Amino acid sequence: MIVTTTGSIEGKTITDYHGIVAGEAVMGANFIRDFFARVTDVIGGRSGAYQKELKKARAFAMEELMEEASELGANAVVGVSLDTEVMGDSMLMMVASGTAVTIK
Image (cartoon, one colour):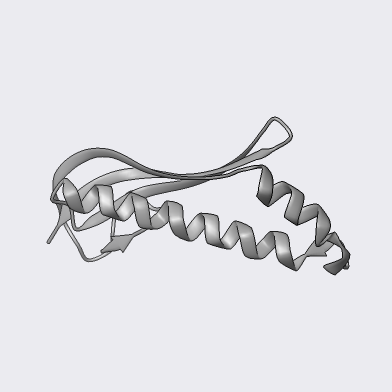
């Protein structure tokens, strides 16, 4: 499945729109506690542990997005947007959303 942040796919024609799809990944209190416990790996203002967890959350959200698109009969998702939100002091949410389409 092709997934892109652009509204179209070069060389392909969108033949059908299936609607908006989304994938979410919510990380709970354990993530935040573990993150602060591993903050010692911060080098140059970056935390490898935090970046690793964000990558996992993004991958999970994207996988869920593609599964939802596939269930609608789509073979691509265009206009994908990624958003990260901190909810309170114990939850982190990653959301991927886009438009499920059929391309030829």
